[in-house]
Image 1 (cartoon, rainbow, N blue to C red):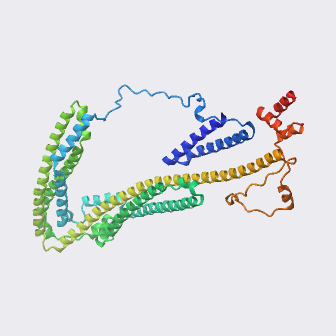
Image 2: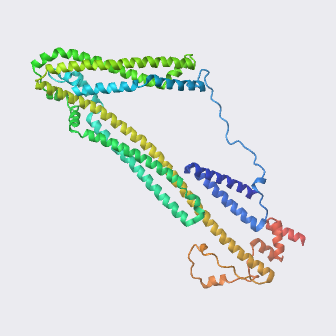
Image 3: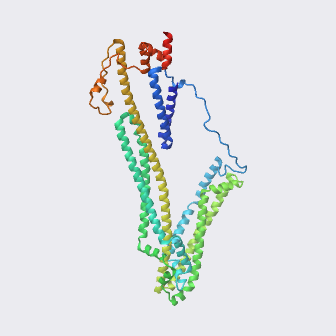
Length: 547
């Protein structure tokens, strides 16, 4: 029954290995299974050989074996005690509540219409018009007699607190380094997979049908699809990087960015002086224009806040759950949320309409302000200078945000590529184990065939010698495929040893020979050993007892 038990164990290890291939499990779990499989195979081979030569017992089927007594493989752990006030299922909605939330989201979309889009368009229109006329730079240019205003200097300080131009340079270097590293990793993965695929094809060609299961192209195709996907993402990111660099190479952008790297004294010295006449004519309008800009800025902030609230209300899940926890049912929560959405949408529409009126007021005052300063070259130069400084600050924050976003993207992409690399390494390692296993199986099969051929030859010689007293003719030569190594020229000693043995000079199995030397017939000695199951002393005792 031991051989049958080992066969059952081999079935289990084979199932484990097949599952490992299917699930692409790494070597840490598969290696112990392969080692156990090798030990079982070796043990089984020894027992099968002994049984075929000595015991000659029938091996029972695996299904006929008695079940092994079950034993505890793991002890149950103690269940942790939860506090009585712990809400385990907080935030989970019932099916009816989920349906109510889904219905609300559809109704909210209808109620909002294009309110959020119109809000964004209004913001872009206001910012575009202000930039077009040079606001608020023209006012800031007139607010300080001797240099830039404290407010403007505060903007410059905040930009430099984020690292200034040196930080921009460092971020560009880091981003390029991460991009190059990601592309290099993908190139290495693709090269290794290609090499492994060629090994599989060569191995399959060499071992023919024995290696048919190795040539599973699905794994390679899936991995190559992942590589192509990541390469496409890298190409898109590279295109975005190039646009940023082209933008930074523009002369006006370079000049604007260089201003934020100067000290305040340097900025003040570059600001053109304004004439007293221009100051006297423009000062009455500065206060009105500043007030109008403050009102416009407050409306812009209100618009941004309302837009963010409506985006949150459009999704609605958080507010919906809050209303449910307050005691309302799903229908009441839906109606309450729709009421809030409609009120907020109406308020946003009013704010957007007010933005248009406030912008018209600002533009009208700006026109009057510029007319009062018309003909003053120094005022125009001050406006251009302040506009350039404002643009440099704005460009710094925009480029800084883009570079930080790019670095975050490349880091996340690098993490995904590392996972792909680990998967590829596990696949390559698994394929190598498969090839080695098939190669070992092929070698064992050839050795077994050779051994069987030799055993058949010896058995034929023995049987022929015992029955007819003659040595039977030699068996046909072995197939050429079994000649794994080159043959050396035969020596005289080898020729002597290779001569056919006469029946009297043929060697016997050691235990059988010991009994025959005592005067018993070989057949009698063979039967005695079989009955004693290979025990030499017991066989001798039985023969002596019978005699």
